[in-house]
Length: 300
Image (cartoon, rainbow, N blue to C red; front, side, top):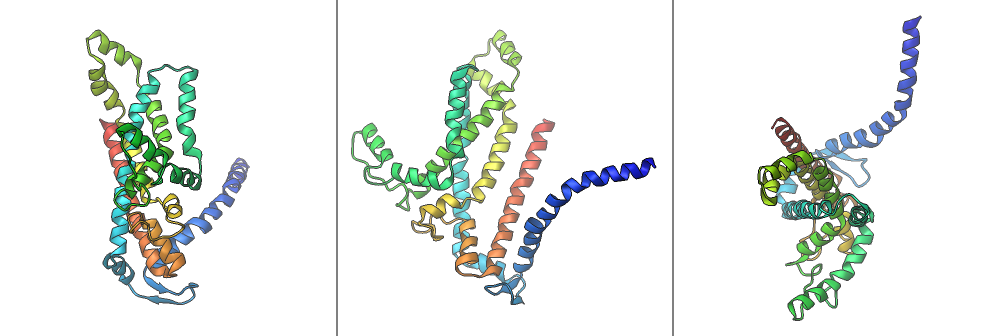
């Protein structure tokens, strides 16, 4: 009797997760398995005609010059976006130095606010700030250097990556600041007090106390920042005029834009599925790096 009652209780518990479990299986895992299958087939526009082609779709990706270029752009933009880590660390130190009062709360909210603004809104606002003629950023630089500066931060292929990195920093710096600030405030104050007694200055306290205790935070921000950078799409797509070419001159075309192009513009689902699988493998590698580094610092 007691066993039947326990089974009935467990069935009640499982009934709460059956709906989300089925939803995940249908909307996540089934499309993922279909993507793996399609990457080895030549799939028609509507997915009804399939012809097995082996690894030919992967060969097309590696031979086609646009995919290596998109892959390189993705890595470069993701690496440039990691500037949020050191800048966020410096800003967090400054905010932490003013104490835990209302002023610190004001700065925390103020810096994080851009992070919750949608990507399209950020692009529209920053296009005005970074435009070539009479852009706010160029006007600011002209005032600093006392000469006319007209740099096409978003229209010149030489500076476009820098321009979109400025957009990325403005939007994501607040998140990095909050993560660094939380890690800073988790460091025991007794360590700094003992260091002061031993005669250690601010610089030595930062080198021997702050940075070693921040390694876990740096690792997390590094790996999640790279994963986020690998999936970058919305802002660059809107910036290029809802075009996947990665204007100007293809310098802003990422892997996600390449996959979108073959999925919805050229309707070659086999090639786009192969690209999605390669992106999955790259992201998985960075996730494994995260696990390894996290265990390393935890053991240390």
